[in-house]
Structure formats: structure tokens, C-alpha cells
Amino acid sequence: MNPWIGWALAVIAVAVAYASWGWPGVVLALTLVVFWLLLQFSRSLRVMRMAAGRPVGAIDNAVMLHVKLRPGMRLLEILPLTRSLGVKVTDAPETFRWTDGAGDAVQVELVAGRATTVTLLRQAPEAPGESSTAS
Image (cartoon, rainbow, N blue to C red):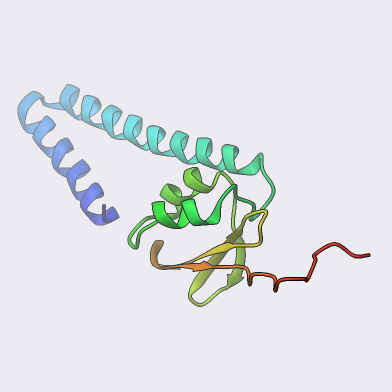
């Protein structure tokens, strides 16, 4: 939701509460607005705490993550899916990358806090006869 809409709804709630119940209504409306803000803050902290417990940019499966992501998602919606903070690739546009154990990666471009492009980067398959272990 646009922050302007949220704040406009809060002001309208305070005005309606004042018109209906006077100052006790204003106190009630302000209490509800503060409670809503605390819920949002608590959600943000919970997501960041969960993401901080894992290595930066590490995910279990890049293909499965790519299927779950879609343009328009906020970073706060993406982090619970990845369960880790992404590696920042570029600043303009803000681009983050998550890589799995097989080398596949998901790259997400954010503009104004929302995902605009979600790209799956696949690891090049090894040619037959080549081995990834050194002899």
C-alpha cells in the first residue's frame, strides 16, 4: 500500500473518532494507529532476524525460489522465501542475488522497493568426461 494512503486513512480514523466520541475517540484511534505501526515494525524485525541467521546470499534451491517470486513483490515478502539476505550486485537499479549449492542463482532487481525483474541464472553444465574434482 502507498504510505500516503495509509497515513490518510489514519488521519480519517482520528477525525471520525473525534466526531463520534470526542477526545476519548481520538485517544482510541491514536492507540490503534500506534498498535498497527508496532505490528509492522515487529514483522520487519522478525523477518530480518530470520534472515540474519543464515549466510548472505545462500538459498536451498534457486529454481524453486524463482518459481515463487513474481514482479511487484516487496523485499519484505522476498526475504521470508529466501531466509537469507541477498548479495547486492548493483545499486542502480538495486539488484540482489541468491545462489544455491549447485551454482544456480536468482537475481532480483528492485525499483522503488518492489521487484521489477526476476532472473534465474543457471550454472553451465559440465561437458561429459570433465570432472569438477581435481586429480
